[in-house]
Image (cartoon, rainbow, N blue to C red; front, side, top):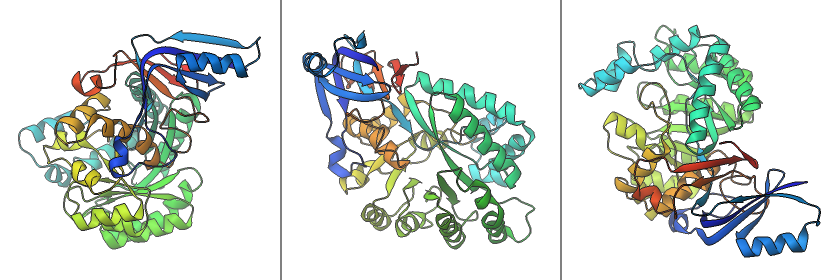
Length: 416
């Protein structure tokens, strides 16, 4: 057995539990001074003060045990961040489109003119599997530097199952080769091909017949862009029910652009998460709370699109479980900046820094159904943790939009 001890940390901060924290429970963190984490072969063995950790070692480990001690003086230890909503595998870039939006062009207008998701679909189809792999690897490397230790990645830039299969193969290879854990989501229902005969309904027929069987057993989740003039409620529900029958867990892009009712559909289907939620009604959010569905909010997308932020404060005050994620994608949100997420959540969305930490760790893990193994620093969980170059966790919001991550540990392995 090999052991790694991080000791003398100025502070250790973590939510606790094996499921999402709802409402006011999101602000409840375990906070220790002069803290330590003992890791055994990639799993957390003990969390406590440095004195208690040394006493635990003396009482429980054989004298000949090889223990590497890492002095964490002046640092703050947190669980690794979980980015529970990204589209990080894609070809091509859309910087021209972004700058058009800065000049006043509407996102939906750009999509109708052949930009938006349709452009990324073409570029992704044209890219080879190895090209997409290399681009994905580069983006994962940036995530490591930001303290992200687990990420969700979606397909969705393919008009056919061949391209979607290519995207899944890329994520499967990256998950095997790269230290970051990748949770895979099948999102064939991202956009309706312009030339597809029969429109959205017929395309959903195709996805049910070919796309879902291709991804079944490979992707953990099925997601759908449930939006007016894209995949509306009836087609979204039909696809998700078929996905559930094949063993997929469910997610929805819901009520981002217009209040269509995707939030209520997520509650009805007891989806693991519903994401965006910019236009969700009070009633639908309460229904989602009662269903136990995690509300995954993506403030960087609202920032990029100059939209009002999702009502995170309202959601928490009314008992929902809120997660925060980047929505990294080539169009509406080309960033993976955790520091920006934290700044937007605390300054503009009304979340406390304690709630924000829970949203980026344990609740992010719950949004991808991994809270039983990651998202908090507790004995028995996977040893995913980060050390901040800061004396306490308050610096995450106070030293705003700055990356304070000093060291990243994944499954007990120091990555940087």
